[in-house]
Length: 455
Ligand SMILES: *[C@@H]1O[C@H](CO)[C@@H](O)[C@H](O)[C@H]1NC(C)=O
Ligand SMILES: *[C@@H]1O[C@H](CO)[C@@H](O)[C@H](O)[C@H]1NC(C)=O
Ligand SMILES: *[C@@H]1O[C@H](CO)[C@@H](O)[C@H](O)[C@H]1NC(C)=O
Ligand SMILES: *[C@@H]1O[C@H](CO)[C@@H](O)[C@H](O)[C@H]1NC(C)=O
Ligand SMILES: *[C@@H]1O[C@H](CO)[C@@H](O)[C@H](O)[C@H]1NC(C)=O
Image (tube, rainbow, N blue to C red):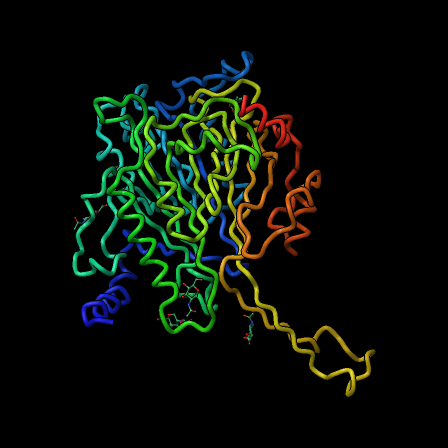
């Protein structure tokens, strides 16, 4: 290790801890879980005077942006997430007379709940009187947010002396968030889960290409360097054990071109074509090259809410639309995606008093010492909550395992099982206890989806 590198590491250790805009440090809870609520496509405009789109005719009269807010408040109450990610088209610029006021109202449920939150831009956020930079700048200035306008060089050792924001990375709102291991565990000071938030742009800036924007070379470069740096940081000495490389959750608004080819691994609904760019950004390749598992979370297509494989080691999931002023499908509930990340627990139980020196009948629970310790990420699961417009029940659908440290039984193994029993099979304590599982009409069997997409 060269002296420059040594000072770089020292710098990270000393300064890195203070590099977040606020002193919010994300960390897995003492129960070994970390839960993220994704809010996609709020399309918030002017509040009570902004009417809903695509609801049943009897619902139009009483429905406005306030219903979007009420839904998010119910989601927060039901799930008590550790982080909320707003995945773009947070406001619908075209219909917004006061964009900053509109953002304040749109993000208010997260701010009021005091839950750390992060937001990225979609293609509609800047369509009022302020630019994408100004929108992101306003977001980054709000309370309880971890949002950043530009990535910080502080998290990259190679540039550690350079404390400027990386303004040369295209877009606004490209940043990274670390989730540390459980307090008191060997990984308490390491990032066990990495979240990347990216600006997938709005519309093509290329004169010969129409349509939506895409992730640029500078963003891929940043992602690649950071991802490699984070891996080095995770494995830096001293470490007692060679833990599994942390998985990455990657949030951006506009789906990748490859989302069109997600076929047989699909869960959820595909009810509209994939609203991707006409250019392949190559970002899937960037993620694949990083080597560790990546799960992409998109918004943009409000009536697609499926998850599926983009390639080996890279999955994608749509959030499903939350906003009532966004296009949707009357009679098909607005919905939001939840992701629960749980840690692996190292159990080593020692029985005090062996078979030979203690008669069985005197063995009590107290004589078995359970030593448990949280470790790296064990499993990432997801489900969605539907707005059924009642104050209390938000039905849970499409529970699925997105990633597991150990190989899972093949999918056919638990096909037709309820999520509760799948959960029981792979986890001792289900994080959900009181939700209703509804088998939706829109969960299409694999073979059918394959045929539908192929045709
Ligand atoms: C919107 O909110 C109003 C007021 O709470 C409620 O009466 C109405 O049913 C809601 N509509 C929808 C579609 O959620
Ligand atoms: C970096 O950006 C943040 C906002 O994202 C700002 O508060 C800070 O002043 C910037 N730092 C530099 C050195 O430009
Ligand atoms: C984490 O950092 C704290 C503060 O520097 C230190 O006291 C603690 O021992 C570290 N934990 C581990 C597991 O390295
Ligand atoms: C630990 O595992 C990672 C990923 O498999 C590997 O890159 C690294 O070299 C290993 N480190 C040690 C010390 O074995
Ligand atoms: C579990 O913890 C015990 C005690 O800390 C340790 O000796 C053992 O190596 C750990 N096992 C694994 C698989 O990490």
